[in-house]
Length: 525
Image (cartoon, rainbow, N blue to C red; front, side, top):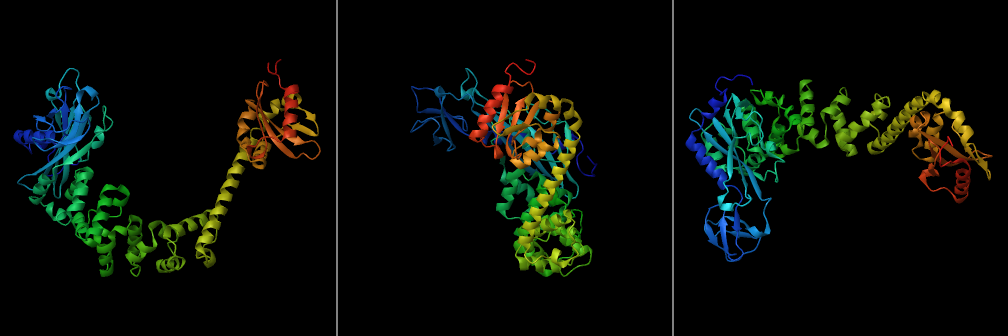
């Protein structure tokens, strides 16, 4: 990790940001946040239960297994568990985040992992001690970034044994998934400690601008670890976006938690113009304040490219409404954006639809310098026609490649074609068996009969299976396709067009063929 002037560099330095007394209090609070259960362990005394939250024996008004009940002593709500009904898989796990601040303005986030395996053979629940382990400690300092101390291996039971590794802060809840008999139930955030800690640090300038509802959403996502780290590294850029209104705060949230979105912002910028990589007009600022959540990175990056070229007339609201994205700009960089926007409004189509059309035109080498091709009168109709034409071209290209591969298999097929023709040549009732001369004929047969025999080229050429065609003797009309086992012991399949059953007369011919040509003992017999 890159050295920072005021950031702690070792696990011991990070651990010095809290005292043993604070840690003991945090562990006690984490244990109290585990899910509450009321254990009823005697059939004779069904209304006597032990509460896992307050650790008292209480009397219940109603005793019912798995019923949600409030503890008469502490008021905590939890399920009743009747011990004789079995609870061997009762396993409760949470990850908690607690926050504090220090005098020099740093903010500390402490993560604790708590679990309770309530079932132990021969041990009553009140003898079970929940486990609370220190998962990680993160320190954030404005302008410096963040540092996190955690176990080097990152998985329980290593967690809490030693904080021996320093890295950039990140959410570690994924380390506790799929462990034992239950998933990580939830992350528990101490929101009061977060509010107190933020108020005493420069982080308040960002979090005071964010509404409580959005702030709580970020906290419950990952304990706000990634947002705190981004604020610590790039305080000005984050504060600029946060203070542009609720709509832009949604955009900010996505840019922090999505690497693709993050590229649209210059996080190291020291002015609003440098942060968004362009000068915003009053109209654009007002739109971002009200409808910034409709902004996506590809549109913003297209706007940035236009501003870089000196094009000031095209405004961000129009680009977002029509979907003028970076990809559309890259497809036709020399066409005036205003012209494209007018065209999209007229056709009532989004930019991604137009981008697909342009990409298919380039794939088919269509002349886009022609106005009729660049701006077709009916975009939807032109798009569908181009899509169908592009699909046909791809199929033809694929067919050419398959034919080329089939031609390369002809030499291998020639080695045993004569033996197959001699063995399986057969004619009866005006119907005949025809053995393919070239491997390309399998592809033609598959296309004509609408089946998958065209994919059998390698197997037929190598002698791993045998394919013959069922045709009329006089006109060579296609009646069916038949596959025979390589050892000649049985017919694998015989199907008509579209893999349908053979007509009755053709099936009778196949039965005669099988009686005369197929040897259950094999070709050697």
